[in-house]
Image: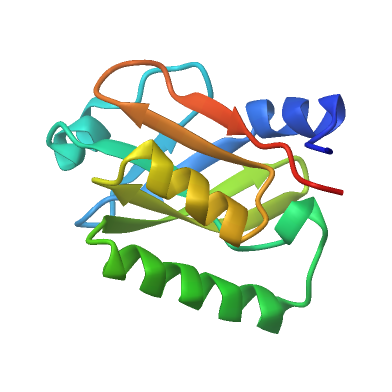
Length: 139
């Protein structure tokens, strides 16, 4: 079994995750920090996850492959009844498109992370600190 190494986990923790709220405002999410008030208002009490289909197993993919995978993820989220916001993760010299999905349970989020071969997602509820959920993968 393999998961993200310590360097990747540190990178995920240092990343700024910006969700675009209705009306165009931005809400910045950070691991181990509570979500901003405006973001919690949009959630209306629902649990959330920030997930992407880009760059499976943290391995760079061509832009067209990332976009196609992200469209499939968006369709999966819609089929599950999630409310969705566009988001982006911003790190030192890189950015990655993501989606905030509200209203899904962790079992569904974990299944999507596995389907799209993601090493990690963010998850949270209310004003609790945002959690980094890392996944082990079969080699």
